[in-house]
Image 1: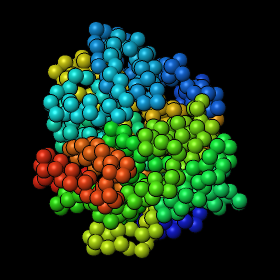
Image 2 (image 1 turned 135 degrees about the horizontal axis):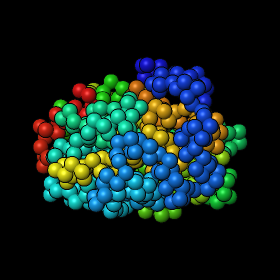
Image 3 (image 1 turned 45 degrees about the horizontal axis):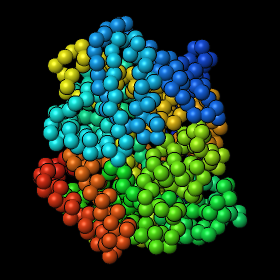
Image 4 (image 1 turned 30 degrees about the horizontal axis):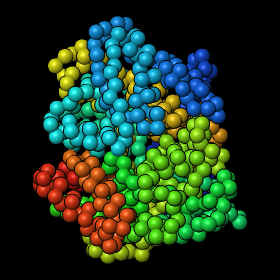
Length: 540
């Protein structure tokens, strides 16, 4: 589908209407109805989706353990009981929002009991994750056997020989063919070898409060579809009363504090609409020179958008210290603000987390677009509507390191633990409940399974649709898998923080500082090799 046709389609009809048209985008494989819904006794997927059940409160460790035990069948098909007795593995991952590693502990409890292996844990906050991993990359050594990691780091890890290639039996156990198209190779691979078990399908989508919009509502008739109007709405609701909480109303929630490099994705959400031209796969760097585009007029406009809202005092108090975890979990889900862009798991958390108060009023869409787009090839603005969903981070995955490569028993144990976490059935549970992950398999898009868990049809069509439409958008902004990508992102956060605090005179000066820092990183890594890898990541 051509971009202009896609944009016209989404402008005319609602997401729900589009999804009811069955295969408007046609990327997700249909599953036979006879295989979709079975009794809990005969269908593990139906059984685990009732743990604890939508509307029954946040899942607990007991729930995670029960889900893990019910999904142990594929492990038992490949591993004999007690086969890994005496093996100890070290697992490094996140502890964000009491998710990620905490769930993995519960999921792997029965795996440890069955296999005889023991797992030791390295838990990291989001802001600490990148520095900790960069230390291993810089020294060329790892002190962990398994790592939860995103695809952008593959150039730094697989490219430097720090990872162990996936055995064939693992791909079969996890049913890797079920992944949505954009997460299939080359994602997860390097030099023709596969290293990744995908456990997430990261892209950023829009979540917004429907009670802010409609006839007589404080935000206007409908949620704005373009960033220019998002800013206008945010300024217009200032001084009004939130219709749900009775507290001061706020519009769009930008995180203004860095998050170990991950906060830069949220400026990208704005910039991609201005900077990702439909005829050009590149938007971060010039693919022939690696010259940064982050200080071109498109990026400067995105930075200016945020600075305008800071100047207008449109954000909640102390937003300068709000990182993305704050905007999602302490603000939006708790009833502060009209909208934000975030990874899709905000959607499942809206209905299944004890801390959410917006589950009945939340709606979803692809990221806002822009009314004009910058053409880097002609160095000119084009006055045409543009949408470019940000496929931020390409999802979390589980990787095994080279520390186990010489010990076959330990190697099999590490890959078995990783395969258990990346299994097809357990993945449905993590997509439907608070986990830190969002839908990423074709089989996650069977609406009837979600309804059986307690989601209503309209909500799940809207939520899953925002993910599906982003994955399949013809002008999606692709995440580059190049060495040093989080060095670029981290230094950009540092410079943005200075700009937002008024230490730079303008958005242009802020952008120029980022570009200068990026040039130094490219030269340190090696410009020619970066050009080749950047082009490859864009399919050029």
